[in-house]
Image (cartoon, rainbow, N blue to C red; front, side, top):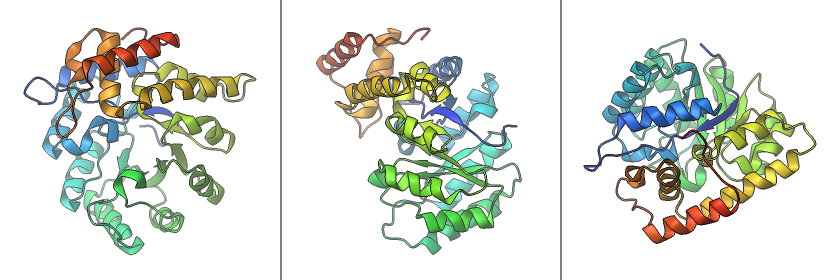
Length: 302
């Protein structure tokens, strides 16, 4: 079992069938393709529509992925829920399957909660799961969750659970915040940025990589920068990644990612999102695809 992650991971988009149920077969195929592009699997992340899926749906999908032979050493499923017992149930199942890590949101419904409250939540999860192989990567995304992790709280968690709290995904969009975490130099604590736009800066500062929405569609290029960040062309690689990301981000992110997968796979079923999200309109999908093709974008092997 992998002890700690580094590299590039994708919060894998979740396909749905016509009745809006999760489509395990398409998800398996997408995960296999991402692995072939050297990208790990942060299934049930924000761009997986994770909070539109039930715990039971996620458990079934995890089981199907494992049954299909997807390498659990490359899996970091999102398991943080608002209800403590839901988080425990899903996290325990991921640990039982020997997923190499879990990406865990804080309970995010109640706003303005204290560091003590968040610490108590994570302590309860860890003690109730009671699995020594558990590895938790904190998920800091205050623009969405509005509840996050201060550096002092991270330090408390790392000191109390040094073998379990092993990293963080910082989706604050604030490089100063990421750098403040890197400066603490907690023992082998893995800091991932939530966008490849910060990947080069993160690698140059001792970070572990990135967990990025656009790794769903541009995995090989993002991984290449991760692998070659010390090369002379690293800055130009970063600029090229930023151009593709900004092209996709000109549209609602999750529908745009799914429209892109649909376009380049020739499989229209991928366009389907679960309400309250709405599919990207056909004219906007065509506009996005044309803009990407104009930049020489492709998804080989999809």
